Length: 93
Image 1 (cartoon, rainbow, N blue to C red):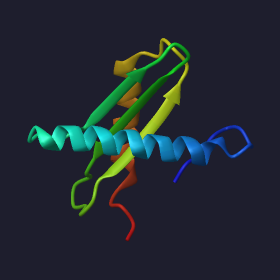
Image 2: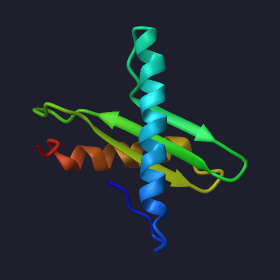
Image 3: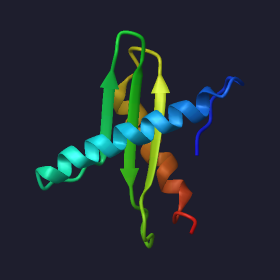
């Protein structure tokens, strides 16, 4: 699922790129016997934050990725993302 405030279909493209980013990070971590719970990527023009979290009682985790302008405060972004994930509940079947 993806959403963007603009109307030109960029939301779906960003969703696909975020899913690919999370997949690559998870694969790299898995090879080291670890799990990825959050990602932060910074470029010259913006930042991407992603969190994967499994709510209590859920069988599968949610992943939420956010694209922001440069200089967003990582601690606040991660706190907000985790707050939203905590409100979502179990992943629909």
